[in-house]
Image (cartoon, rainbow over all chains, first blue to last red):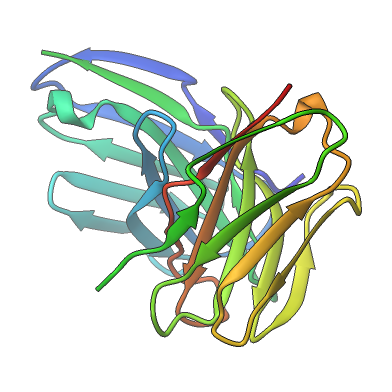
Length: 111
Length: 113
């Protein structure tokens, strides 16, 4: 299956600390995207990184992509309680428009 | 700009019944995607519609079907409901065909008793 796998499945940190979650996938991709889901609601798009990019920043978010290792990481710096959510990576393959979502990392930020 | 809307927010059905879920994409978006998220699991791709046609479907039985209307809104129909169909059903839309950002609605939570 192309579906990505996030690691870890769950992460608990103190407010102010950095949170890092990883995503691995299996086949060549067009781009990789990270989404956040709050408590069983819809997903919110965070950031998109294309296959020819290695790093991207957006506010407190930093995403890296290593296509040779077929992996990506999402770093949230200076975490806040409001960052508590599930984070999913989605891979988009070449020659298609299907998104493959991973199983998600559940992040808890303790105030 | 209004986001993706879904209705109803909650739906309770009994086994064997049919469920119809509705989705309105962001204005100007022509692609609509449906996903199933069972409790505690990731998103499973169900269906993709673009310009009124089904472009792709995930690994779900034929009793999961849908359609896209001329105004690009979409319906997901689930026939002969089974207990394991209980899940959050998410609809997303995108501006163009091609794997760019998907914008999600709040979901419809379906409970099958």
